[in-house]
Image (cartoon, rainbow, N blue to C red):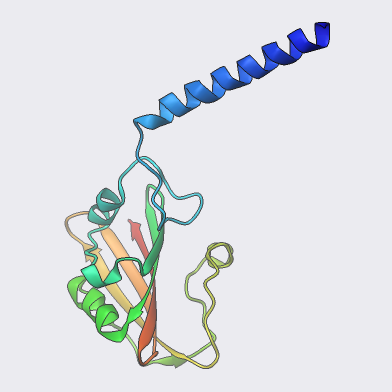
Length: 161
């Protein structure tokens, strides 16, 4: 009998704690399905992209993943060649070199690359694009874009200086 009372009390305490947590999280920003695990919850995705001065064309809908922190943003878009070109143009990314044969380091952090599953291919070539300091938000951006014909992938790292 005593075990039932203790077990019931423990179950009620756990349910109370879970209920309190659910009520606390109810008013916060919903986690975005496009975000990699560990991405910041304190801003909406739209606010994040505005903060990093990035425009997302409609064609990227469902074709993009990202990780956002307070000073950094990592984003991968896999979409049609036209869509990737549109993203590059709208975000003022400038090609800074000729295409290099893979494999290459897509971002400076091998830990992040492994965490996100970002791997370059020896069968593809990659062109680096960049945007220098943005006067509005003091944001820098660098991206690698593969040479796919029908679908291409863009790997972007943006950061506040």
